[in-house]
Image (tube, rainbow, N blue to C red; front, side, top):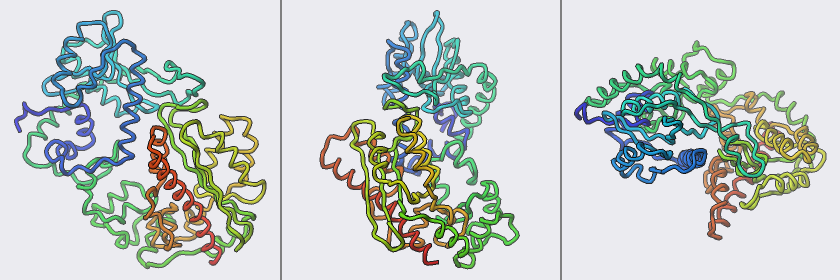
Length: 492
């Protein structure tokens, strides 16, 4: 490919900053790219929704987004025409020397253009500065004198009360002074990327921390194909630099980690267990844990979803919204197991009905068993703050919570089958192999969140019923799993 024929878009520039090899593969070997997951697509969709809403801060604009990505030439043509006028332009397109960018919002103020890049986040990250620095270079090189360039992002302190207040929901922060200092580096990076892309060989770049920062690369499946599913990269809480140190010294399998390699106590337990293939069980600590439990026991699990834009009153951007719980109740050791559950209808704010039924189901005494208590207790605290009439009850519930994860996170019970993880998805098959999430249509929390969120727009009754059945089955297994895991701990 000739140097002069190489095009670099804003997204390509950001990819190249992270890793030249990733950019080269994207340009020359796109067939090697990983498929976009449902969760990743949902993130993209949220960003699009935020961008569309931010346009209303600058009303009366002309949207060129419908031409993207199928007709870039028309975007550039229309931008050239509209730039002579006064109306704001959404997705204004610029092409300078093979450098492409599409500015979210371009608005004129006192005959001077100002550019606004919209981000579906709650702060201005360093990557956004490089992002806008590239756009500033392309737009100003195209002959447009930008008076200002800013990032528009979400205010994480905004709480919805009635109609959205866009002036409070969004924060507009000028970044021009900061990105001006980036301009020489932007130009140099572009030159380096074009030279690299004009080469006939893939850059010889080994895997490293850049594979996951600032974004998870979309070529992980290709570049990491020689790394086994369970490797030194799965050593719990090991610094990433130490992981790559092991790899670069020829150590991939945990069983090959040198005995003198510096590890924490818990990391050493994991490595030792893998080498010996023996379980580590601290009988005394486990006995202390199970003997301290107060019956009846309530095994509780929540499911939540979130939205970048608050969809209900008393919500902040990205705040978790409780829509489901499963509750298994055990009156005494080896006693009768009762199951109760709640799943909201996807039409209104589910939190009030959620907390009302939970208060009725949870009783007034006995420990409440959860897995990773920080999540459930935080959600209950939020409900107590958003709905003060339930604050006393949410605090009372939180005071009874016991974390079943503790014996596993503290490595009081560890088996090689857990593969360094103490998540319930790893602990359950290790301790109770006859129970499994594998055959469930919904088998992890992210999928549950997306499934319920999609129900708000779903009209097919059969799809709604199937999704609800799948959600109930998944959440029920989460609490049944805790019941069965405690049974195992009781037999130690």
